[in-house]
Amino acid sequence: MKRIWVLTFFVLAASWLVIGTSLAAEEQGTGAPGEEIIIKGEKKSARFSHAVHLDLGVSCGQCHHNSEHQPLTDKDIAAMENSQQLQCANCHNKDFAEPKLQSIKDAYHTRCKECHKQGVGDKKGPTKCGDCHVK
Image 1 (cartoon, one colour):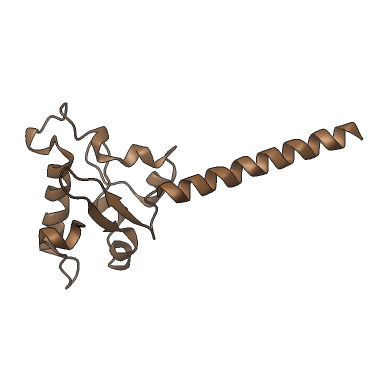
Image 2 (image 1 turned 180 degrees about the horizontal axis):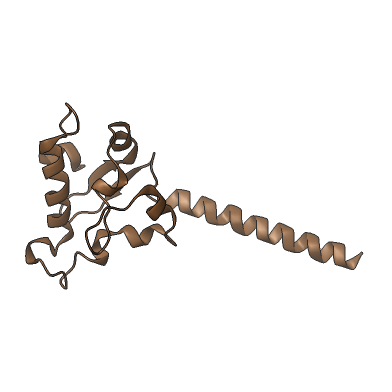
């Protein structure tokens, strides 16, 4: 009887741990596809919607790349231990080889604005500051 109570306790504790971790991830915003994220900026933050980009047919690798600048697939990203590995600041910082891409702002503006100008299919993205940056 004592074993059943101990086993029940461990099952419940593990369940609460999983549920609590899931809720915490939702509250903080993991940046998962389908979720709008806010990218903190030096002056103004920018909005980004994975869903909008995925609906246009933009692949993960068009934005996310490894240290050799090779595109990451959705499988590569899913295999990562956590989404923190995708943060641009992991590489784009004062130690980055290309001085013009050492700041997060410059990395985003280079990648995002250029893609928005070129467009996907017949659709181009917004290029004015206020289109992406929230007030």
